[in-house]
Length: 301
Image (tube, rainbow, N blue to C red; front, side, top):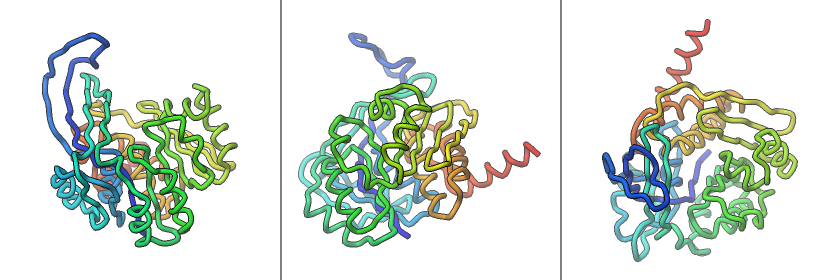
C-alpha cells in the first residue's frame, strides 16, 4: 500500500510574537525563522515518520531545492515533484506566547497544477493506494475525480476552505479531516455534535474526523461515533499539529488499527508536535509515539 500526497510545499516565515497582530497594530517579533512546510509536505513527512511508503506530488518553483532536500531527508519520495517557473509557495506565520498561530498563504507554484501533470503522476498508483489532498493547490476536484477512477482511497482536508469545495463531488472522498472552523463552514452550524451528524448524513460512506484543538478530536462513521480527548502538553507551536494528526491517523489505519486506536495514536503524535517549534522538525517518529502511548497506558494501571 502506497500514499501519494498531492499538496503544497511552502517556505514558512515564522514570526514569534507576544500576541497575534491586531488590525492596524505594529509589533516587534521576538524571533524569526525560515522553515520548510506546507500542508502537503507536512502530511507527507508525518506519514514517512510514522513508517509509511509515501510520495510527494506537487509543484515547486525555481527556488525549491531546499523543499526537495527536506522531503528526501525525512524519507519522502520526490520522483513526482515538478519544477515550474517562478517562486514556490510560502506562508507568513505568527506564533504567540501560548503557541497559537495565524497563517497567511501565498500559493506560488502550488497553484500551477495541470491536467496533464495530474494524470501522469496518478499513473504510478493503483487501487487501494491512498491519495491525500488539501485545498492549498489548484484543480483539487480533478485530482479527486482521476484518483477515484483509479480506485484510490481519497482523503480530503478542505483547508483553506472556500465555497467552491461544496460544488465538488465529495461522495468520492473516503476520509475527511476538518477542524471546527472548516466544519462550521461546511455545515452552517457551530455545534460539534450537529457538525458530525450533518457530515455523516451527507457523506455516509466516509470517515469523518473533526479535530478540536486542545479539546481533542471526534470521529464518526455508521454506528461509530466517539471522542478522543487531547493529551495535556505545554504548547510551543501548533503549526503542524493538524497535519501530524492526519498523517498519524492514516498511517495507523493502514497498519490495521481500529478507528478508535488510530485517533488515540494521532492525538499522542499531535501532543509531541505542539511541544516543539517548527513544522517538520516537530513531527515525532512512530517508535516515540508508540512508546509514549504504552507508558501512558501503564501509568493508568
